[in-house]
Length: 212
Ligand SMILES: Cc1cc2nc3c(=O)[nH]c(=O)nc-3n(C[C@H](O)[C@H](O)[C@H](O)COP(=O)(O)OP(=O)(O)OC[C@H]3O[C@@H](n4cnc5c(N)ncnc54)[C@H](O)[C@@H]3O)c2cc1C
Image (cartoon, rainbow, N blue to C red):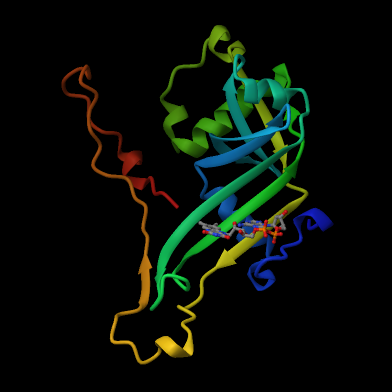
């Protein structure tokens, strides 16, 4: 939902109101940047994230300043960015990027004890699909050392930039190349842990993992 605070002023034509675009940005995200102000100084921190019904899950150590603040309901700004290409224009001024980005404003909801394990499971499943089926259960100590919050997604903005180079008339006779260089993010070949017991194959489900 858009508010006065989430109305795009700069390049407003790039604001996207399609809930499916927002959902796609969130479902492809492994990392969100979470910004809070501490004594007037903003700090923007990258953390792992996962969709959780109509909220976004964020987790961290109980000792983290960020998570202590989020658990206290400190207002925060969460952004997710996917860079999809470089716009290689005929001048540096017009050179830019293709992107899809989402900003959410609000205060996080602390996930209570009874909801903590399923929420942590949802986070692991998002980041490492199918992995929870073969992982041992987290210990009580592991769960209690972790804070997990759900960030609301009811005050968001989405900005999408996907245009052609918008070169000026003075550059249109130029002989230099211009165009789009797509950026693809992907996983590489799995590297076994140095201490892996011999004969343990890479699980088949890892081949299904994709980024973005
Ligand atoms: C990968 C990437 C690279 C960028 N590089 C640059 C750059 O080099 N220089 C530059 O000036 N800008 C860049 N931008 C755009 C930048 O994020 C801002 O949109 C822009 O600077 C305008 O800022 P503003 O404070 O004037 O926004 P305003 O339009 O005044 O912001 C008003 C509201 O619009 C929404 N909003 C603004 N920007 C975004 C966004 N990116 N995503 C989602 N919601 C948004 C927020 O809700 C915000 O509160 C980049 C964006 C991305 C994703």
